[in-house]
Length: 384
Image (cartoon, rainbow, N blue to C red; front, top):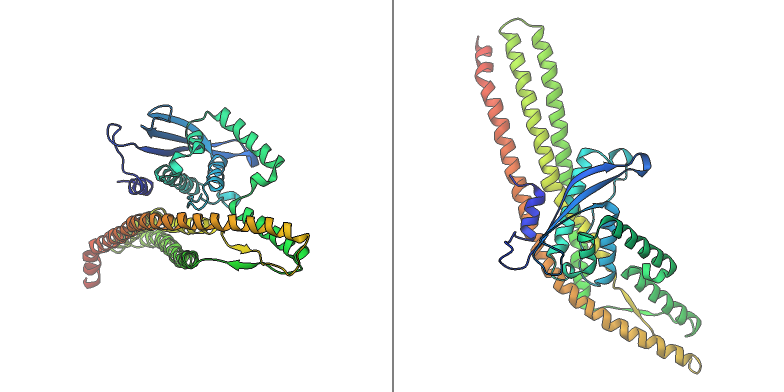
C-alpha cells in the first residue's frame, strides 16, 4: 500500500520514464538524529531523479537538514513575486516532541511534499536555488548559505520579504506625506479581482482550519477509545483469572477482543493523523503562506503645497506608478496561480478524503467482525 507521501507525489507528478517527457522528482528519506542537547538536529537524505539537462545526472543524493529547506523557501519567496511557494512544516513548539518518532515522520513526509510541489511547479522547478539545494555538496551549501546570511546582514534590504518591501514603501510614503505634503495621508487602492482573491483565501483558511480541528478531535477520540478498551481488556482478564470455568475463559476472551479492537483503533488513529489530519493541516499552512504575499498598496495623494516639494512629489508619484504596474502584474500571476492551486487542492484533498472514508469503513468492519466472533460464546453463557 502506498504511503500518503507517495500518493501525494503521484497526484502532483506522475512518474515518467527518462525516454518520455522531461521529469523531476525528489524523495526525502532516512531521517537521522545528529548531535546532542540543544545542538541536536535531524538530517535527511534527499534523492533527486531527473532527465533535465541542467542537472548533473539522472540521480543525485545529498544530505539536508531543516534549515536548508528554510533557506530554499526563503529564496524562492523573495524571487518569485506572486507565486504560491509551498509551505514548510512548522517547528515543534515543545522540546520533548522534537525527536519523537511520530513528529520526525510527519516532518519527513511534509518536507517530501514540499520539495515535490516545487519540483512540479512550472516556474519554481527552473530555479537555480532549487538546483543548488538538490545537487550541491554539503560543504558548498554551508559556505553558500553562510555568504548569503552575511550579505543579508550587511545589506539589510536584501533580507526583506515582499511584504516587508511593501511595508517599507508604505512607511516612506507616509513619512513623505506627513513631512513634505502637509500631513496628508496616502489612500489605499486595490482592484476587484484582488479583493475577490483575498476573500477566497480568507474564507478557505477558515473552513480548512475548522475541518482540521475536527480531524484532530477524531484522532484524539480514536486514541482515547483505544486506550480505554486496552485498559478494560486488561481489567476483564484479571477478573477472569479470579473466576472458574467457563466464566473465567469467557472473561479472558472478552478481554482479548477488547485489546484487539484497541489495536485497530490505535492503528486507524495513526492513519487518520497521517492521511487526513496532516493533509488538512498542510493546506492550512499553504493558505497562510499565500497570505504572506501582502500586496496591499497605498497611493500618494497630491498636496496643496508646491514649490520645492514638487520634485519630491513627482519622484514618489513615479515610484507609486511603478508599484501599480508591479501590483497588477503580480495580481495577474496570482490569478493564474490560484487556478493551479485549486486543481492541485481538489486532487490532493480527494485522495485524503478517499483514504479517510476507506479507513473508517475498514475500522467499522474490523470492529464489527471482532465483536460478532464473540457473540456466540456470550449468548451461550447467558442462556446456560
